[in-house]
Length: 136
Image (cartoon, rainbow, N blue to C red; front, side, top):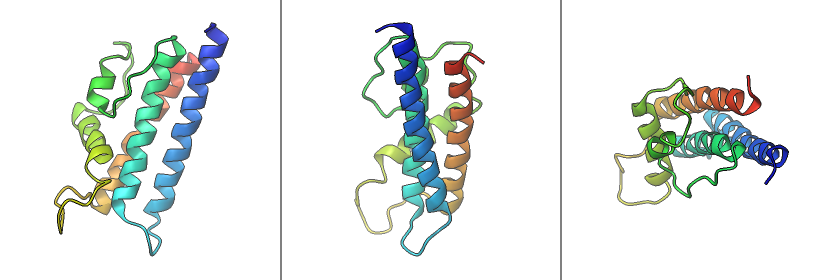
């Protein structure tokens, strides 16, 4: 793939990330049928897709993995995502643990506060990765 095509594909990843983040924000408005796990899930997806845009822009196929800590190891060392490894791990857990009902009162379900923190973290990651992809 040529550099222009790589950049175009990376921008598609960023567009999908932007949509996931917008969905997370809609959920945070707490409509009557909304739950915080859904906001956390879409925040994780936004972070994951925006992080994957960086290697895609360089012509590298991203892994099919939801572990943001592992994904960070693929990113350039000079790219500061603006969040801690703990935040990356928390976001990663939101992709794995909340999609399935495992028990009554599941302790892994995020609170509204944790969902808000996830959305803020995803926005920070998206800002950093978008700047890297665009060369700013």
